[in-house]
Image 1: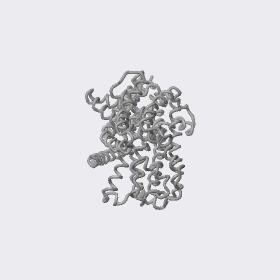
Image 2: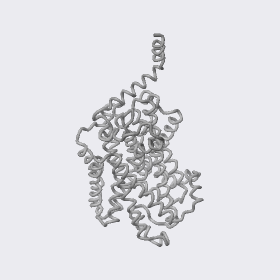
Image 3: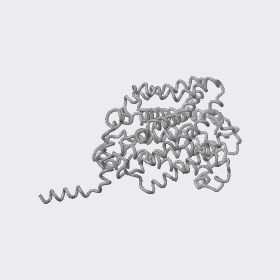
Image 4: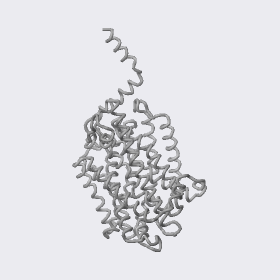
Length: 469
């Protein structure tokens, strides 16, 4: 009897605030049943082994980070990174490093939010705001998805044109039908999607690694470039291009995507130890894959510096880069049709992997913000049509004038800059709230770093918008 009373006293002595926070967190997780789950058809579909070793468990969590990472090396990053190297050699490689560290911080927070609450960022933002505010946020975020897809669709369409000679309009229409591929892959399981995207990422990595090795860059100068210099602030054109690299790297749709696909693993969400383990492995996967994206972006800049610095070549378009790699007067003895072809293959791989994740992001945002109830195939087709409409309209209107079509890339970065705070600020607020996150709330140093990064990115993006206009 005395033991029973002692046990009851111990339960009563649990801090009331933490118990309340845990109760709300567990309520949120358990209330995500049915259609309210984020990406319901793949939510919790990947089984995690119980009582397995570290390596085997990590393999089970390996995959979502790949889908997130492709957004950080999509065709929208290519022009800015290669132009940065061609114009300022290796001095902007420090900007890629800083951007990648910020991306790792934000994506870790997004994954933590999804795992702990059982909600994605779109769902939580809609729940915490009024209906009218939710609609406004949906429109802004949908514009960001369209802006993201513009670079991916244009990149894929041009790659098909370079490889097979298709008219750009035909290439864009073919790209639109990759949504059917996604529907088929969903039936096979989420791990198949992760594997295919990982293969496409590997193609991109090896193509640029091979081309950089052929270019024989100055390795000591590369390492010096990782240290930011005063000229980054003093030189206005360098600062502008550096901000372009930052703007093309950290994109809002990846935060929604990361908060959703972190929930694809099946584990005990009501067990404190299991949740902490899921966070640890998911963040490790995310950081590893984002490190790979960092390497790819560095390779792009190094390639631009090693081949095009001092040549005064016009490299503002994908076609220009493709032609330059086959021009011995620009890149010297290594010029060959093979280099150009490999570039086009990597561009196609980047565009296709990015469109898969872009379509998933569109579904997450539609379901989260406006709670759209319609068949998944119709929902994904609608998402793709909304994204492809402006590109297709431009391609038909400016038929045969690829330079005009690629100018859409510049405008797409403006939309991304506008939308970024509307994803980043709620993410920081939610993950810093003990009421939402319980014992998994952001540590103080994470909160401080996140707000500093948010303020800096918002200021830089506002500056970019003003300069672009």
